[in-house]
Image 1: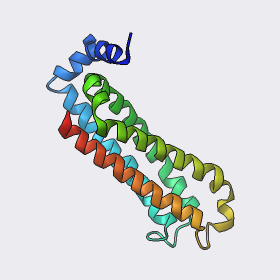
Image 2: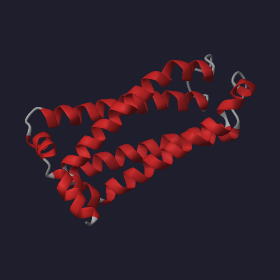
Image 3: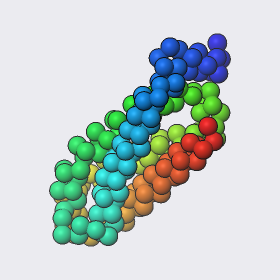
Image 4: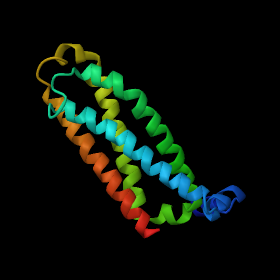
Length: 162
């Protein structure tokens, strides 16, 4: 069985067809996906702006992270769940769409970027939290902003291509 055969089978299951053909369920899932994306990426942008010292300069990074992470993770979880559901309703078309593939690559890179920050800079945050943000942290923040802008652009473009 090829990948396309598997994707064709998945998108033609009863529940995937039911979601796709529902006059309420598909729009609710799609709207939830966009709202969760806005929510989670919005929180990430606030953190990135603080890391760049563009906003919230009087607040420590640790304070901002502590306040935003629960909301960011919740939004990301809803975003991923709804994204998978949307993919499964049009799996063959999405898989063949170059914007979908680029979006997936950018999502993986954004995850690697966040993981790099968590491993490399987060453990030493107490050393620089109230002083100048290290160059590497600023590079991670700019990279994060660029990657998420790319994810959003590809997602919107992909929607017009399907």
